[in-house]
Length: 125
Image (cartoon, rainbow, N blue to C red; front, side, top):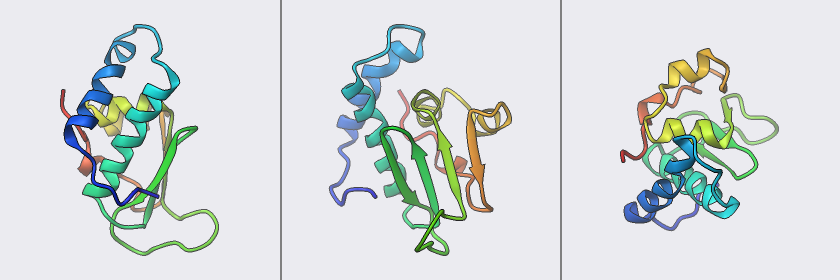
């Protein structure tokens, strides 16, 4: 669940800039840097698309609920998006299109509300 603390856009941008070399084919960033970029970008998604009808999961770092609509209360939510950290950051930074990621199987999206492409990219560098 997202923190109630507001996300500083400069902090989000800096965290994403630190993982850019990895997205460009360089060495993997430190786990803490990767986790920070994923978590801040997911919290930003939850802030710009408030609600609890979709759960977006990026294991092992974070999951958030977002998008207005019916709220799930128990068990597996009806609308779930799950992907890996690299794919999530490519989506969040606008380096990968939602439809392409889903089509090639990099994103698993189930449920009628699971398309979060309207809120992507989250940050532009």
